[in-house]
Amino acid sequence: MPAEVLSYFLKNSDQKLRLKFQIVLQCAPFLKGLKISSVITVESILYEELEEIFREMDISYRKLCSMEEKSLILFFHAKELQEYLIRPDIRSLLEAFGYHSKDLEPCLSRLSERVCVFSERGMGFPHEIGVFLGYPAEDVSGFIENEGQRYRMSGYWKVYGDISEAQTTFNAYDRAKDHAVNEFLIGKSIQEIAQ
Image 1 (cartoon, one colour):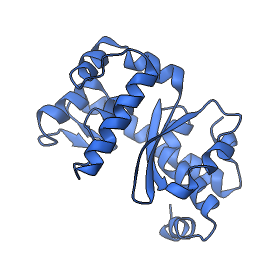
Image 2 (spheres, rainbow, N blue to C red):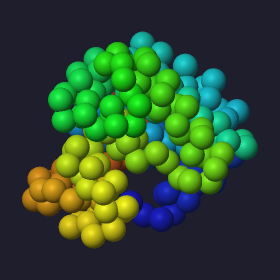
Image 3 (cartoon, rainbow, N blue to C red):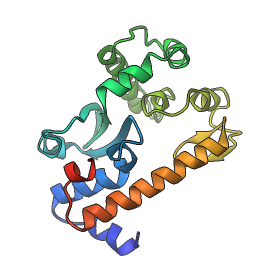
Image 4 (cartoon, one colour):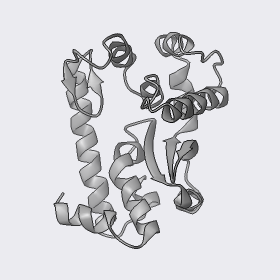
């Protein structure tokens, strides 16, 4: 995508247009059904706009934490995320970080709590956020065990497991982003892009 297009939208004075473009750009694989969730940081004053943007869509969202004038928002498909979080490999990972419930809401509450604590301490994000973003358990575990070092490949996340599968996924995400942004540029709504 040309830098001029990116700059135009990200510096546009229309905050709502900027927010929509940010969602399309950063959440395209999620909007296109390739991911169970996505996370972005938005200006806190724009949080209320999400209700209108996602009205009549099967997309849930939750503010994980607000810091200064920004809010970290998790977009997700509730049923798919719930099913993913109860997989045995995912459960064992989450239980190690105090996620004792198998229900989605308590897990999201725990994640929100941990994100805020990490943010307040200037520690980035809790590593298990990768689980909530649908990253392979092997890669989340590898990241934790290796403290973000000695990865085999880096793209949308750091890969410690199957690099061939990860590369295929990254390529699909790139295609989804190109497709979604092009749809947005010709005037399609987020609802139309997500179909």
